[in-house]
Structure formats: C-alpha cells, structure tokens
Image (cartoon, rainbow, N blue to C red; front, side, top):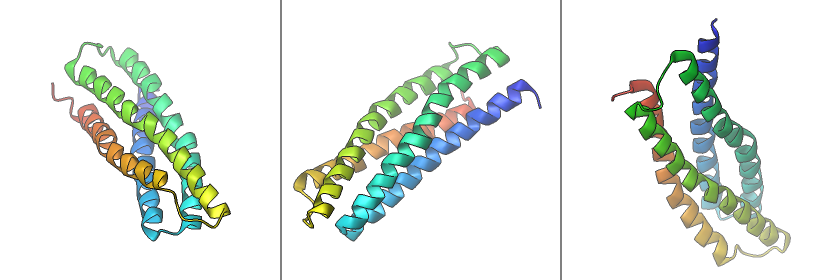
Length: 155
C-alpha cells in the first residue's frame, strides 16, 4: 500500500465517520425527543454530546489534514473548482455544526435538570430542538454535496 492510498483511505474513513455519526446522532436524538420521556432524553443527549466530541470532532479535524496531504501527494491544485466548492461547503457545514454542538450541550443540561427535578422539559429545550433540527438540513446537505464532489470531481 502506498502512502497516497493510506491517506486516501483515512480521508474516506473520515467522511464516513462524519456522515455516519451525524446521521446516528440525529436519529437517536430525534427518537429520544419523540418519546417525551425526560429521563431518556437526558441520557440520550448525554451520549450524543460525547459521540459528537469523540467521533465527529476527530473526523472534522482529520478531513482537512488528510485532504491537504492528498493534494500534495497527487499534485492537485487548490484552484480546481470542485475543490474550491468543496471547501466552501465545508465552511457552510461548519457554520451549522458548531452551533449545533452548543445546542446539544444546552439541551442535555436542560434535560438533566428537568430529570433531576422530576419536572417537564422547559420551553427553551423545545426552541433549541427545533433550531437543532433545522440546522441539520443545510449542515448535512453540505456534507453530502462534498462527498459527491470528492467522488465525481465534476468540474
């Protein structure tokens, strides 16, 4: 195995982790939310925050590092349009993902507090959840487009 293929493998693996973790987090958070069970929501949100910190963050860091290495190893230019569009979409995804991380932390904290107090979730939780849900579409959509551009290199 050459260095190029090893780095390419890591780059593809990073994309899989970002998409897989993002999809999994969204699914489990949505399913927990739908139960309206404060204890279950608090436990799920706690796991979601940990998963995002471990898996998504490490992959988000690995992607540009492995991408730059791939460019150097393949003599790809920073001026290729597919790459410029991908980088812009990566920034868009980040602009939606970063606030989502803080929303998840706050939703976790609100759910934990409600669980401890045996109270209902406060309205702030529901406001954050709706915003979190809405932010997922452009963030995930940008990531899906990046993957397509990475594979197809259409222009």
